[in-house]
Structures are given as C-alpha cells and as structure tokens.
Image 1: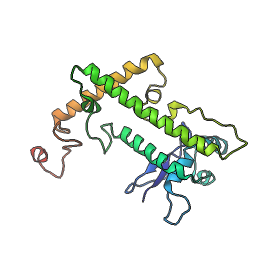
Image 2: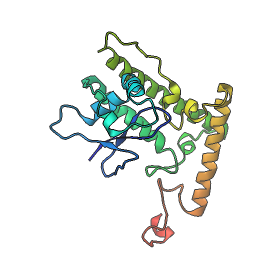
Image 3: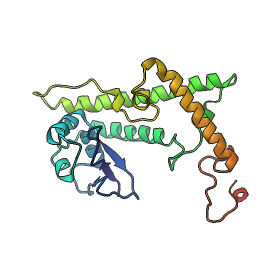
Length: 231
C-alpha cells in the first residue's frame, strides 16, 4: 500500500517522503497510510506535512532530533483539492532526480547521453545544467505554492513564504549538494559531478553492468543468464 514515511532521527528538520506500493517501513522510518474511506488522501498528508507551517510546528513540539510516531500524530493535516496535482508533480520531479543516479532502481542511463550536442562535450554540459536548473526551479515554484495555499488559512501566524532552497533535497540542486561551497563554485562543481558520473557510467558499460544499446541495468548476475543473452 502506498503511503508516506519520515526519518525518526533527523538533524535537518522534519519532512516526509512518498512511499510507493511494495516497500516496507520500520522504526527508523515509520509509515503513514490512509484507507479508501478516509477523509484525507496520501497527497493531503504529503502536502500538509511538508508545508512550512508543519515544519514550524515540528520545531516547537520536537525540540530535539527525534520525531516519534506520537509526535507526528499531533501534526495538522489539511485538504486542498488544488494541491493534489502540485504534490504529485513534486513527487515525480524528485523521483526523476533520484533516478538520474546509478544507485537508483529506476536509473536508465547517464544524463549527458540525453543532451548530446553536435559540437563538443562542453555544449552537452551546458544543456544538461540548464535542464537541471529548470527542474530545480519548478520544484521551488511548486513548494512555494504549497506553502502559500496552506498559510492563507491562517490569519495570526507569521508567514514564511521565503523558501530555503537548500532544503530542496535534489541531487541536481547545487545549494543542497554543495551548500558549504561558494556560489561561484557551483557551476564548475556541477560540471565536475556530471563528468564523474559519465566516467562511472562508461566503466559500467565496459564491465557489462550497463549498455549504450539498452537502458537501465543490463547485467548483475541475472538468474545465471549470460550477458550476451540480455542485449
């Protein structure tokens, strides 16, 4: 059953993640589930618990690093029909970002291969960075919208519409990945990261783990089948 999960012990504050069907949870990452006749959907849960209002509530109710099940049960949930599609798109954006990593089960192929330029690799890097920047910008836009809609239902609270971009936990978000570095270093660091990922992918192709002729994982001792059978 699909649901939501959160890290019980966290130094980065409270946040919840989408839990797809078929995955389990445990004490270190508890789960939230809704039934078909519940008033709230799992998208309401994700939208509410990831809002700036609940982030502030969590800091008040949980002044330490622990966010227990008993604490989370006290957090408010709201239902805004207009935020369901917003939340779904945010989940899709973050999944797309995670799937760009080789360690993801949904990894298809290196990002630079989707941005092949006719001239040189520098142009491919620029195209890839532009695409990543657009993805982060869209996530910021949707997160800000989610906060504004929920905050509008409160008259006597201090509005915090300024989103901390470093809290957008995307691999392609330089403020999250290289937050301790100078802003001037973000672009060269992002390019170095892309090149390192390309080298890693090329090694995977040479070793048979990946293939330019097929997306995703090609060979990892798959049921004893030979590599050439899988291509």
